[in-house]
Image (cartoon, rainbow, N blue to C red; front, side, top):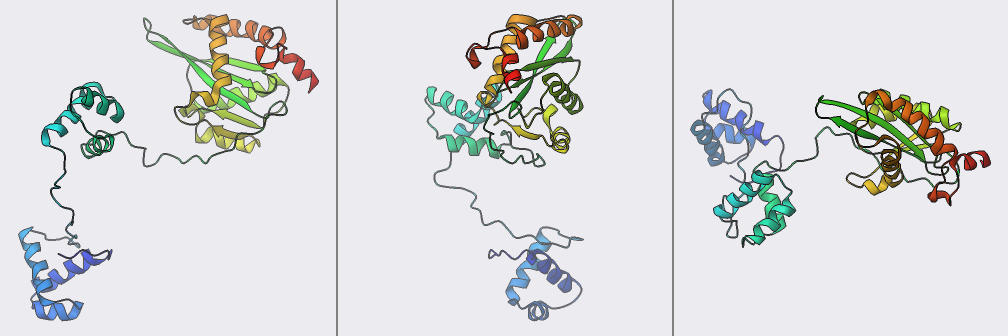
Length: 295
């Protein structure tokens, strides 16, 4: 059957078949629709062979070939699928692993095979598009504030708890707060609290792509004339300042497994030291409070 790009042709075919089934001849139907009689006859034969009844469409048969002279051998396809299911690694790792086993295959072939077998994780259909926001030039306090979360897990009690963190790139003023669970509402409240503690307004907030920094969070910031900027996926260096602060906070204050009931007091004492006494190498061994006063 000839290929066509007409989006309505499936309905036309079935309408022709229905007319023939109701007693019209293939010649009459062909003249009515403007097709050759043999074409209409093939439509009717195909509908009968495929037992198509009660449908309003007779779809176009794909012109895609069933085989290709350079297609992968079934044994190689099985090896690709087995390697993926065994370790769950990405296509690049699967390809290199097979090459080490003496099975030479291109990366594109591995990706096509995994896609055909439904083993690729694809971008969600309804995932919200996030337009690119240019990184602002930091010339004053609040021009760019990076925020993130530290996750803590107590395996024996099977509990999780979190610490929100934020740092201003100009003054290096930092703020942190303990929460029992993450949510966009908690994220928004933390940013407002950080702004109050800093004593100056925020212009741009930069966060990673965590669910706690999603659409509702961005809309609430926009209502306060604050721009939300997301870092690139799997690019932690985009948030290098807050990642470094998280490490410092854990090394000098919280440790790796702090007790939840002690965290608020620990944060209060450490942030007072960090913002008003601690020399910061990122600002030429000055104290964040000194830059806050100058501004």
